[in-house]
Amino acid sequence: MKASKSNQQVNEHAAPEENGFEKVWENCLRIIKDNVSSQSFKTWFEPIKPIKLQNNVLTIQVPSQFFYEWLEEHYITLLRKTLKNELGIDGRLEYSIIMENNANSSKPYTVKIPTNSKKSLSNPSISMPLDISSNAIRNPFVIPGLKKVNVESQLNPAYSFENFIEGDCNRLARSAGYAVANKPGGTAFNPLLIYGGVGLGKSHLAQSIGIQVKNQFPNKTVLYVSADRFMTQYIDSVRNNDQNDFIHFYQMIDVLIIDDIQFLSGKEKTQDVFFHIFNHLHQSGKQLVLTSDKPPVEMIGIEPRLLSRFKWGLAADLQAPDLETRIAILEKKLYVDGIDIPKDVIEYLAYSITNNIRELEGALTSLLAQSTLNKKAINLDLAKSMIDKFVKNTTREVSIDFIQKVVSDYFDLPIDLMKSKTRKREVVQARQIAMYFSKSLTKSSLANIGMHCGGKDHATVLHACRTVNNLMDTDKKFRSYIEELEKKISVI
Image 1 (spheres, one colour):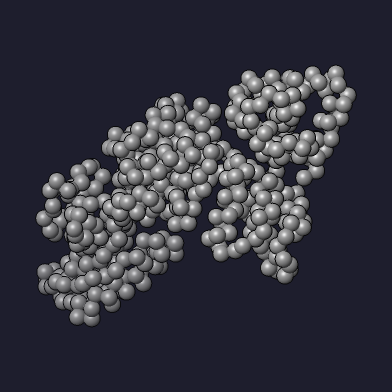
Image 2: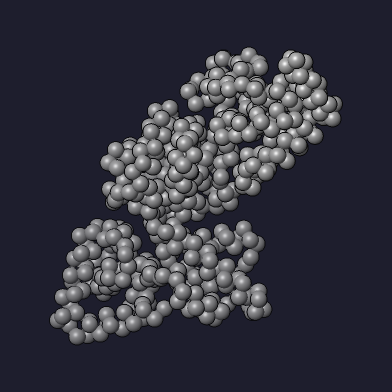
């Protein structure tokens, strides 16, 4: 009796096969939707496509190996019960997984999972022979012989090398980045650590590398992720008890770009996981690109073993752009947007906003908006009016370039002469005053100030500051020069 009842149940569920696989999967989704959160349903079930229903076997197509493993880990019981409800106790499920088998093929392979068994994920049956040729990837994180999962790179196409303006402030970092992009994992710059202040183009340059790699090597897997998001993903993996999946996923990447790595400071467990990912990628000849707001020697709360690895490759800094670079950035943006504005307006913007490229571009956008909305011509008066309001709401630091311009105008000396090697008394004094204000009114290093003032060393800058302080104490006329100049610098 029991056998006949079982046969009857199978026969009763044979009808759905005639109705089509789409209808069966639609009925399954209706049940699944009531048993998972809306976000989980959207993430893990909407991308699934039913392919066929044959001999009581429903085949569904999933986007990747990672996707399949996640379903098996978290939703196999729900899938099994749902399919049993639709197809009966003999119903079976097959996954068709999109993954390249070799360099010239993207044919899916299929993993069969019977719905009435407790088959282990580590031992699925494969419905087609695997390619174990020299092209095959052999590692413990992907089924042997199969190409890696297609990973969305998370790159912003606007952040290309073509849109990154090169100057003295970033030449080393850009050159190193370009070398890495054309030979990922094959240069001495691994890892490449790009560091600098806010708004200087770290994220832009890091993503430029990723975009160039994708253009040059379409088969390489590139991933850009912020350290904050990396940490959140790790916490989620701990909560869901799938840390291995998290680690395996990141260890499959060819070029891993982590933005703002300093945010891992103090996060010991996240650092430990990243340490293992870093080691695996580096030993496998994969490329790592990191960005930070400070060099490794100044990072607090990062484990010494990680810091030592950050120093394996190249740490390249991005400094505040000089005047010429700021002008070039504005001109490039205007050219791309097809807009033409007077040269003196561009120079005024470049002189006024000095240490943050993001704010510089924002000021230009605000100026264009003011002109369009108020139907006013773009001129120096409009720019001054806008900048006066703009800089009040932003943290603004006087630039070395601006100080040099004010000082040179005050003493009626060309800037080029003031930066030259001449030892004429009036030129030397103007140069020393410019160095003095640069040290007292900016956050620039002594070496950076010296570089802007004709390639002088830090000792020369210190000597200039001491000389100015001594003259202020002993020479009333000289002190009046300094007071007048200070007012001029602070007014703008």
